[in-house]
Length: 259
Image (cartoon, rainbow, N blue to C red; front, top):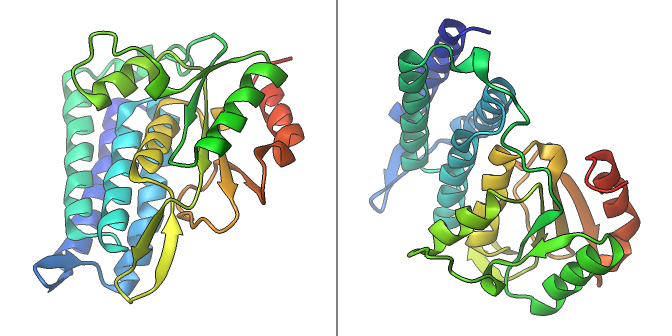
């Protein structure tokens, strides 16, 4: 597709999202999506995330879209009007970039921004025992270099997100371990437990940055996960991460990280 075709598709999504946000209803100063629009929004969010990844290759826009979606889910249990408006802003930014640089698509190389190294970013929450187990598996079983953010020097970074991006961009693979860290009450009063917000954000960032074949999600029993992480390889374990070690090895081989 050329830039004009991509812009036309993005405009269609913007118009759809504008219709969705125009139908929101307000409760306690928060604008919510109606149930039918909620389902449509989830579908369109996945579609546009995949479209941008397929069209632009690894990019920050796909991660931003997933981040805006998950922030709404974390805050109130359902997507909010702000999530929709923020996503519209991202799509408009993509259009502006393509208008200024229409040759961007022709010059892109989808794998150029994926480092060729043994660095594996380990995304984790509060369960130290589980992420340390995964770290040992990455290092000892696969001879890879696990990158745990809180173990790295600040490297001149002034904020946590700056430090995250500094180390994340130099990784060729990511593994996220979801453990039941936070209890959440949804809009309809349902209680459930989910991973920490930073874990969900970082997973979304890598989904946009790397091909989904280069991201693994390890889910501990009892942890809720958004169905919207479609396309990511999910490994559920009961007690120990090692229960899935053979499947992890298979995926690493398929991605060309190990042989």
